[in-house]
Length: 400
Ligand code: SF4
Image (cartoon, rainbow, N blue to C red; front, top):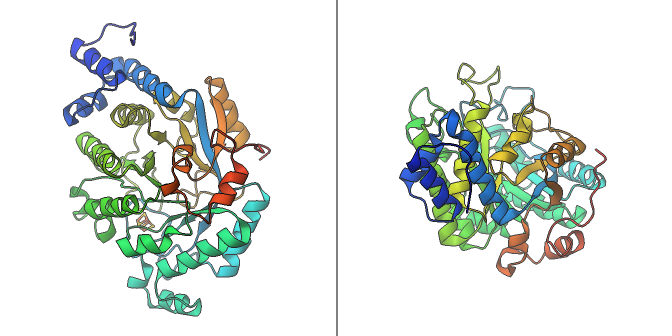
């Protein structure tokens, strides 16, 4: 039984009781949860924390990673992006194979275990000079070059690659399968309205929700543990946020491959088209995280990035998260370069002050390493070497 020491709307209280009892929630239930008033927020968060504790206990995880921005060119122009660079920008860059290995090796020396390959989507469709770069490296497509670099990092450094190259065909997913321990693609939103002129996804063919869901399904068919999530505050409605969470839930129910769901908040930056939009408040994040936990249930790993809410991220623990995502001791957050990651010791203090243990995990979660269909043969030795019988990293260095 779940006790609420507060007078609430009886229908809302009954809904929280059902959520805590693991009853399946409907879209209507989800929209009521996320519409929680300020006076209902503490009860909503308590329910979400209770469900998190049922599935995850008091352990909160993070992954020690090194960020490898293989190319910051992209065929798209999302209204909130500062990662992608135009062709004339002096910071436009595609990493050479030597650079990739140098960064990965620096990460290995700092105790990193995940090589996070983040890159723009299919820039060869747009830029001739980039096609020349690819040819110089012996490739025709970004995915082919990425595959080679993932394999090289895995073989030469032992770090476990996790690639985020945007939408992919079934064949492209298959080509990356053997050299990635897991992969990722943010669903972001199921809202198709955001493809209209002046909206966040105008001119972004890869942001069509159904294509992103297809990529997640292809990964599911091929036994690939997959990271996804929603990006909030980019013009979507509260109902569309709920639809996005249910769309992710549906993929997971069908394929069982969604290993974590990120709830990420849009941040304003000076040099983006959406610089005049409002950022979601912490209150909005708390409602969304709690609703995500109650919709996705006790078994799902739910993550919110600490660096995007530096003054208040500890509150996210009270709303039901159990993971902080990738934290890098050596590379900045190339997606949000204005927002440095907290040091791992600070993350530990915030986590422990709230009554949780902080543990390092790999880029594949323990529930997936325990299932052979999700583990690639080439990744198994590193997984076994680094983890203890909980599936989490056996010994940690928190000196950075
Ligand atoms: S957010 Fe991703 S897909 Fe959109 S422009 Fe930036 S790099 Fe490209």
